Image (cartoon, rainbow, N blue to C red; front, top):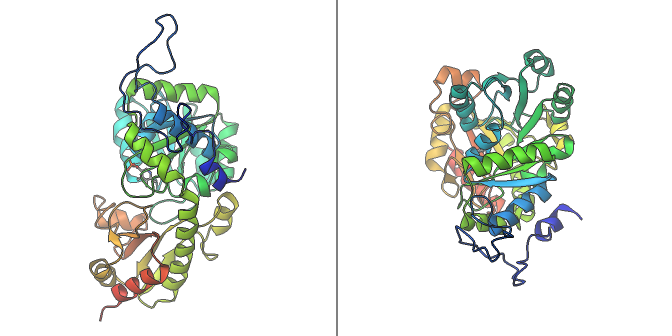
Length: 379
Ligand SMILES: *Cc1c(COP(=O)(O)O)cnc(C)c1O
């Protein structure tokens, strides 16, 4: 069965009690036990809820894991996964990781003596050098945000396996439609379902898929103990959003490629970052592990003034920090996601004040191009 069919038919789409084609939202905190000697499957919704279970089983199928877990945000998912480790453990984290992941690994887990080293994941030599006897995991994100840098997943996974290191991949920018890290040997995949999986800018959520029983049991233990579960209403929004993941992304990705090619031709644009363009330095690696360039790109305007003018004039696209919705969203890292980092440090990371990130929505691409054309013009 191909991916598009699996989105609609994965064994979790029909309510077993009534046959309803839309899974009911089981708004229940607790469940009556009909037989005190034989407790039924559900007792309390932190431990298990039928709507959440359908979503969790769905993400397991889509990411080809053995188990799935739904959390109250992408960060709750990431933090819960990282909570399977213990004081004294060491984790490698790729350098251009999502800001929230940087914060939680560099200033939160350190309080519990889980140590982190940030590495350039495109440099296998550096990864090998940084592995210590207590290194238990490597956390990757590809393509990265906002410069769309690529990590060779197969190469890193090979090194990790040689050292018995758990590989965790943040798959948010690709979603399970475009990239399946577990198929390439990763152990745990996290998605901020707030983005493409939900797809409608209406829910904050995180989904995890895990390979193998031992790691699944560990994540399940954290989910139930720590308790950062997703509520049934939000689970339903994701179940609904997931059904159109493929058609949305097929269109958004096509639109991103068209916009990337158009941007490259504009004299007000200095540089375009999009792994679907053949001149992206790692497009070969990316396309060997993903089904396309995705729907996010970024570009550098000719100078900062052009970028600021663009952000002020852009009309059709929303100006926001998120991505993956049905509406095109532009963000300005220097003043938004990366504003807390001093300018010199930002520039050392390659994030110039002329950089703009775009997440393509479902508008007609030519309308977006027209909007951008006017916004780029300083006349
Ligand atoms: C948004 C995002 C997250 C965090 O997800 P939330 O749902 O906002 O908590 C993690 N990783 C990436 C790559 C993201 O874009």
